Image 1 (cartoon, rainbow, N blue to C red):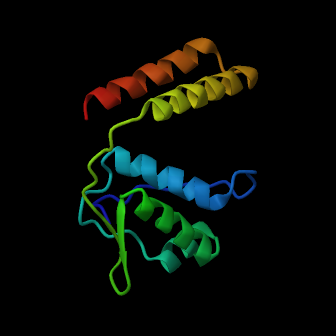
Image 2 (image 1 turned 135 degrees about the vertical axis):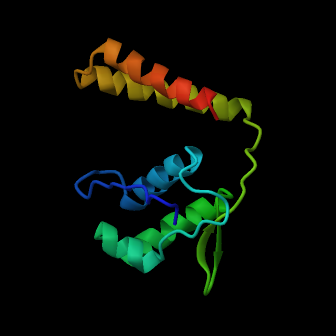
Length: 132
């Protein structure tokens, strides 16, 4: 685990599957550099206990991240972060991202989040991306 273990939060009441929440949360931490290659993630059982979910849910999340090239999963070693070289984005990936971002912004607006707040958060995130 990294020096200061980041916090992973899930919402058990959400309609979104828990394993997807775990994947998204861990992926965000990986992208932000909270984990370095060689870091060991908590065991499946330990993370399941910490989050209050079934161990198969965590195992599925780890398998998804391994398939994306973030983790090396081996018996007896657990989940180890590996050096992931970013793939080249396809036109479809770029279009899909733009569509999902538009949907997310539309949902935030429909939930009453002020446009200025949305712009502020997107700008702050874009600045963070520029530093990596």
